Image 1 (cartoon, one colour):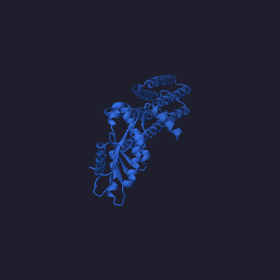
Image 2: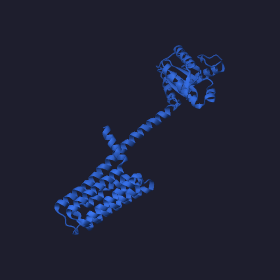
Image 3: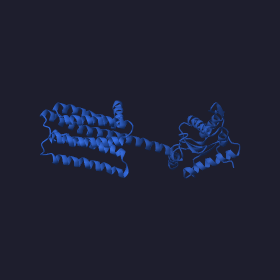
Image 4: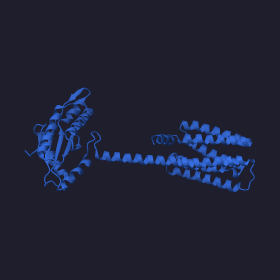
Length: 357
């Protein structure tokens, strides 16, 4: 599958060059057939067509895709008319008109946007009108060159091949590219969903991702006890002022790592700025106190290393256990926040787990 993916990626990103190469190869084969048939005029015309496609390769290489697009359509249309006049309908060269229908649609959708896409409809209408004129106009006309049945069969097979190849090729790369677009869209949606629920800097939950985790616990009477801790980094503004905002970001990431390690099994949310809220499920206030005190000491003693500088910070924590009086997640979070604020006003770097005011 990896090999197929690589091939399809190559074809999608190099579709115009592949198209030019195949069209050039078709005209080389037509050149050989008409050489055997003794049709000097069509030999010369196929040489001219090969030259056109070589020029298209150069134009495509330098990004002149619209010129290449128009050149392919004009060349095939003109060639179809002239070859039908020269060898007649029975040789099937008019089928080459159908070979450019997928090309008109596939590349047209990339080249034309908005109302300009009516150009695609116009080109398809011209293509169909050319076919009708050829089929009606030359049905009883004696061809200029009389070719052997074997040559006639070769021309029919080659024209049919061009038509079938174009249909299969462009449908295949369109379907595959559409699948890639769908997968890419799904990945983007997942990322957007993750971004909507996660903090970009720390990858912790944000409020939108955190609050829906608390609410079911409050509504479920059978749920065990749980606690909420509201943490705030002490004097965080001084860190930014002294070391810069990049250092402040690194401090936040460092504390996040320590919290994830020490508070395994808990849901952690960056509430805003330097504020972090921790949801401790199936945990009473006594066990919560023990874990949070260990966390506070670790943060105090383990510095953030930033460009060979050691930055020591501390946190103040407010802790509250869920009670029946709390009706919404914001209620218990506010209670923990008020305890944290009390700790800020009375020394910082502490864990407050009861109302002291």
